[in-house]
Image (cartoon, rainbow, N blue to C red; front, side, top):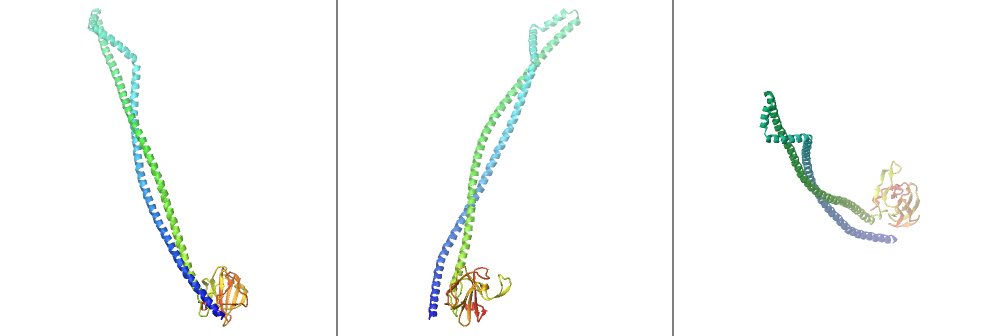
Length: 402
């Protein structure tokens, strides 16, 4: 009668677990839908960030093109300045040459100033003599001479004086003309240089204004470039962050879906009872099966007499079917172990436990918690080592379990 009650209780628990699994799957489906929407929204935001990145790149390219034009214009203006400066230097050289000629003319004029004065005095005297009549002097020289030879010498001297007077006047006129020409040329060159200076100053003022405008434009372009570079960097970082978020969310959702799938399989498996009335003794999956294997600690091949079922520290361990507890103690390499004797000379063993929930000679029913998962004995981590022995001989537990 107690077995029937226990069996009904187990069936009720199985139905409850199945119902909970359906609710969990429904809730998980709703949550999954929300998470997928979140990922799609993140992808949309990433696309928008990508568009912003492309727009920023295009703007930067445009700014660089504009900047090239600005630099070209500035180079052209600078070349114009160099050209005008070359013209100014040439004009200054011409001016200096003219002024030097003027100085030399003045110096030459000062050197012959006395000679010019004497020449001017002699010219005046000659003018007076000419006015008085030089031909009379020749007649007087002829008549006053003692002889013809002396008269001839006097007349020749008078002719020389007359010729010298003409030379003096010619020389005086030539020097004065040369001086006036030099002074005129120097004045013209100086005026021309003044005009060039004025024009050059206007060019320089205009050039400085252009330079200021160009510098202001360059500063504006640089400011815009800094802004768009910031936008570009921000868009790239945003894309990277969103991509990382999407990858992390997809991985998390995949893990959760896999965990939900495994949990659903586990819940379904735990809710099952084999035809012989057996249930799974732990909630995890099978790691190592029955048969020969390389022992993880001893390092050599030996027979593995049962199943290693995954579980976490402290997880419940259940009796696979009803029976009487015959062992509940530390048992060599098995660590803390429980043995339950069943009907038909069949016994089950539960090893590596961290604690006991039953005592020796206690009768347990299918699905009763008899201990907790651990890693005692020869164990590499928390798990349940589960064996079934028939008349003391280990057999594969899988055919007994659902």
